[in-house]
Image (cartoon, rainbow, N blue to C red):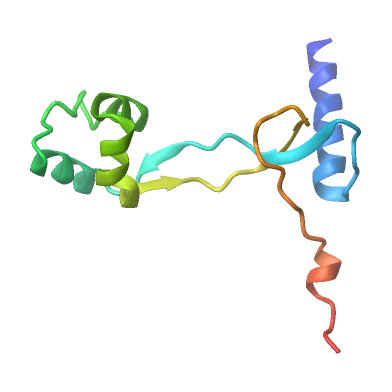
Length: 115
């Protein structure tokens, strides 16, 4: 049953994302993205220059752990230019989901001749 429900959800999502099908009480949003450091060496240098030395496991702490250790405000001030979010894929979720709905462009509209 679990496989079948996933297939139905995937089918519904495909219709909504690729064929502009509107489902009552559902919207298209970006999937959860994963943050990563652009350059770990740059993050390490900035942290160490600001007196933070306990930033390593066997490698640089993951973003969430370092952010928790330093506090969100300091983390953002120091590393906002060093964080990259991956491009998100659209996904179908209930309207009650907190994420902002995204608009999907129609390829036919993108290539219309202007008069």
